Image (cartoon, rainbow, N blue to C red; front, top):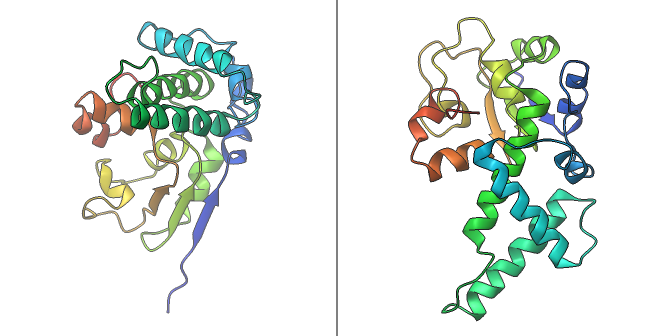
Length: 206
């Protein structure tokens, strides 16, 4: 039976890339996400979302600044409870708007930290894998996808890489990819009706 490899990637796989030597902001971690977010200037499309998110956190009066995931869990739970308890009222914070604001914040930081770069040591690592192998990542970013797109003779990039559609011919040396926390880029593309553009490599503007 052929050996199968499962490669597990955490935040260090992105932070250790040392993008900071060429980019103004280092790759964010859960613990310094909001510290870095306040140091960057969001694009016009995300400026309002980032500003709203920061104001909601300040209004929450909870010590959640030191964890992006704890902040999302806290605000999302509150928004869900408000929608259940007060369905007829116009709520300042809806679950849909909260997701949109977090997506804008994540996009803002990743764009500053990573741009569209792919690093050689990621590419070399992925070159050793094959279609029976799997990459599992807890990261939101596109570090793995951009490295995969730099592999030799890779078929046109699409959602087959995530197991959502059949693998095309020529993908025998390309591992599967599972993003356990999902992808903000995929969420934004879906919300804006641009799934096709995402499947072709990335959502326009990322």
